[in-house]
Amino acid sequence: MEDFSYVIYLVLFCWSLLGAFRLVSSHWRKPSHAKLPPGPAPLPVIGNLLSLGDRAHRTLADLARIHGPVMSLKLGCVTSVVISSAAAAKEVLQKHDLSFSDRAVPDGVDELVEHVRECAGASNPVEIGQAAFSTTLNLLSNTIFSMDLADPSSETAREFKGLVSDLMAAVGEPNMSDFFPFLRRMDIQGIRRRLTGYTAGMSKMLDRFIDGRVMARKESNYRPVNDVLDVLLDICEENNDELDRTNMQHLLMDLFAAGTDTTSITLEWAMAELIHNPAILSRVREETDRVIGRGNLVQESDTASLPYLQAVVKETFRMHPSTPFLIPRRAREDTEVMGFTVPRGAQVLVNAFAIGRDPESWEDPDSFRPERFLGSEIDVKGRDFELIPFGAGRRICPGYPLALRMLPLMVASLVQGFDWKPEGGVSPKDMDMEDVLGLALRKARPLRAIPIPVQ
Image 1 (tube, one colour):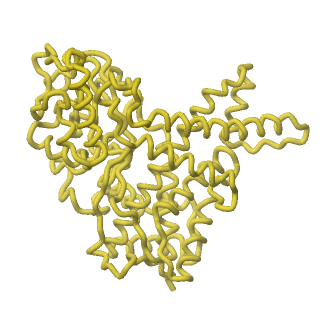
Image 2 (cartoon, helix red, strand yellow; image 1 turned 60 degrees about the vertical axis):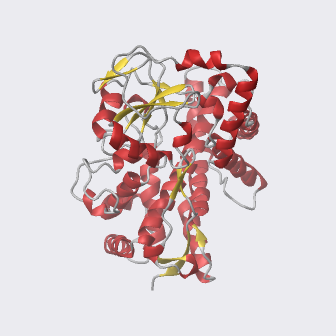
Image 3 (cartoon, helix red, strand yellow; image 1 turned 45 degrees about the horizontal axis):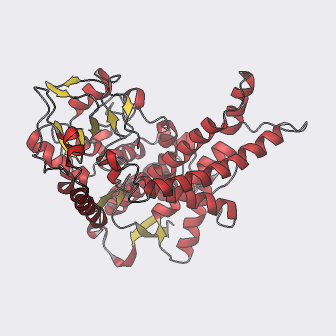
């Protein structure tokens, strides 16, 4: 965040040299809406940017306690409205879903268990986030292409994994152009240039995969594998459409970019909370032993019979939503929300982190208590606005069904055969559980833990 602050000050200096204040004033005029939501007083030019810090999800949650669940801020030149309660989120994401539907334009589990076994045999720590990222990438690549793109011995796999990692890092970097639109042409942080390079690299690799499959399908002895790529090509052929390569590339890029990082981060948080709370970890293992049997590998079909495991996953979503502000929306038109006017063109941020820790909705909201979901009908599929890690309405994350299948399976696989202790002799209660916000809500210090085989 220090680098970001430096860039802000640099912008202010350049601004004064260029005498561009008039350019900003047109963005800065107070909208002529009688009931613009309340919010903290902005500074000239930069608005409320510097007050956010590197944990904006927490800062905005605190500000919402002062100014209310519908709050307006100035982030640079951009009017932003922050939604911080389940009731307000229901109005935005359900009642006025169409008005806020615009976007702000900005066999793998076995391998995971084997990797953990190898680390356990050597008493080596496992970096949970990295292991989860590789596993998620492997599951997605097998589902989409029927190939392993997480194999460290494959140059193609290493290149693809690096591109996905670099792409997510660049997307998550704060970009001045989002707050000061007139700077977009300058690309002063080089983010657009880097993103262009990463997406071009991914496009070339995806082209190779698609071309290889198209050629293979022309062979007389081709046997369909019925993965995502086969289905997409079947759709194109059945509709007599020419293959729109660009749209297909964008769809596949979205699947990989959105599916790998968020899922691996959520798994890391789930394991961090289980190691931090040994009694909960023991209860998850007891449930898997009782339902599946010790020594029997957990299967995807088993997870529906593990209610406490499902509750652990829900509680992780509640406390640690991987995208705490969801994906920003933009108001198509002036819209009234809870008595306030959200002006046309305003950026709308739904603070899922604040909603998940709202004491009006949750008892003891800052404690990890999976039991709260046992016997509860609350789910994460966009119907219960107290818990919306994937969003809701027509812009709900389309990948949530896959995440809800993968996460319980990976958690159960890591817990079923292993006990865990933090690296370095740290006691579970003294673990560092701080978070840091980029594009996703990560652990400030990556989780490294030592697996201990359960006898």
